[in-house]
Image (cartoon, rainbow, N blue to C red; front, side):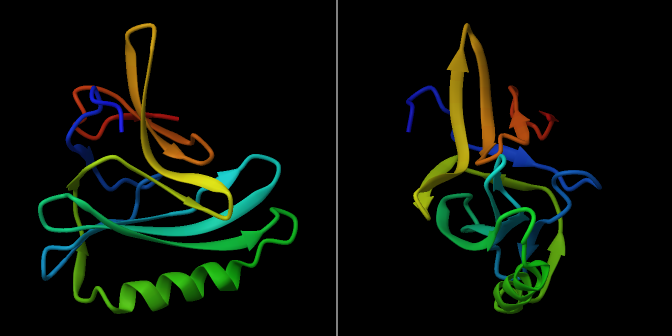
Length: 140
């Protein structure tokens, strides 16, 4: 990780790209999303952090191409993973950026800096870009 990367960013649930930012009763924080490789692959991902916001694990399922995407596999993945996190509630979370590789692709909340502009991008797909002061605001 880049030493300039923020220690934590806030993800605030909304009705657009971050509806499933959640906290379980035991303090586990998690985020459910559907990353993608443009023009290639679709995925279902659940990212988990402990109660302090330290990254714990990623559960990622390859759903296939957009044309042949298996929506049932996405739903099954979600139900199976979230079942072990119950009870939970949708709430803002404060979590560390991270990067993991699966299926030959980098996934995560990945820090970048270009011409003094900083972002933490939700990858792959770059469909959410969090910006300083890391309080939950993002660009798409």
